[in-house]
Image (cartoon, rainbow, N blue to C red; front, side, top):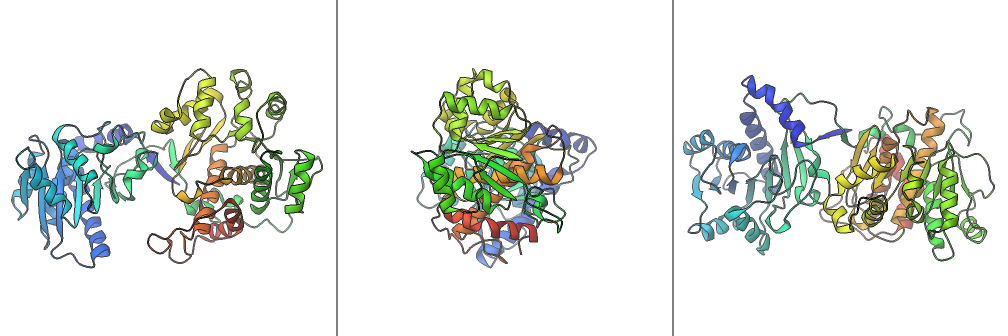
Length: 519
């Protein structure tokens, strides 16, 4: 797992080192210039003659950019530095003046020239705003970013620490038009939460972490990685082969109540995804007419009542009093429950008082807004999308449940901390994808509960849910052709349309690849 930190946590870790005289800026600039040279060689197969334009703002981020430019100027490159403020890092400017770099101060008279240097560069380096900023760039710096965002030719852009204009702690973007959209971000010390949280994650591009020797505390937010599913990883039990002595009840049994006359496919997709994820048994406990369709599609589904280690309820079900009564009954049992779709709409303040960490809610932005509003914290969908992480944390605080907040990046919040998954494919934005995720979560929880045999209250259900989210996203990447074994990526830009059914077909392969360490 990769830890992710707020700006405040990073700055607190920097303070004792700065007080002791540690040259953190020099370390950051050297690391950034090394990564940038490597990326240039990979992109253009040459370093000599590369045209690099560096945007420099006030404060330490501007200092990082100036020292990085000074390093790069020692190589056979053409460096143009554009300062967007009169107040820039004095030592950084001094270092730059000992090189052949060209220096331009941005003002009304030089604006057109600055735009030209930016748009004609082989590489644009963004060092305008750092982790201390919470809003987009203002004044003439914001005007420059806005002009570049409108320009038909967008140069390859690398941001230092964070793309200028995003909130490093929350991922909020106050003004899209005045926020840098980077192809790569070199972040210093550790991953910042805002780099992988929506909506800012769309501005970060490929993230490179430059170690500058910070001593950081245990992180509240963590990012699941493939290594977590290998035999030594925390999530190996979700994808590994069962031991020789196993039988179906030791491999996890989940009960699913999903699908309706209006949405029968939701029940079929959820149960098929649950089966493909490798439990000992899946029981379909819903409507009889839907049960017949489900058994026809997947004859291994059992329709009899019996022992289960998790429930899934709500996918494809219309909300109403009957469903609310069912949800009320299930959440009072000492068994993990996944509450999806229609079941989420039954949650009100009274019912939420019965929720605990082993109850896993799976809202998208609209459902999350409705849940928060019903619980006395009015939010629109737009509000939630703009403050996605904060909204997910608030939902957990209000309900006590584990929250799986679904978006371009899925944020999973529980009583032991939070997890984030942002490595999926946009092809998942299709009908049935959420039902497939619900089925995978139901199996993941049942397998964990059966295998670990730990107390419900001691289990980090957010971790288990995060594992299911990762499996779902990785299976989708396989289905879309975005992952090629042995390459770690697909051919550049390749991504095929997918369906929920195709995702389900790839779940077994996803489990095998994850457990083997992604060859």
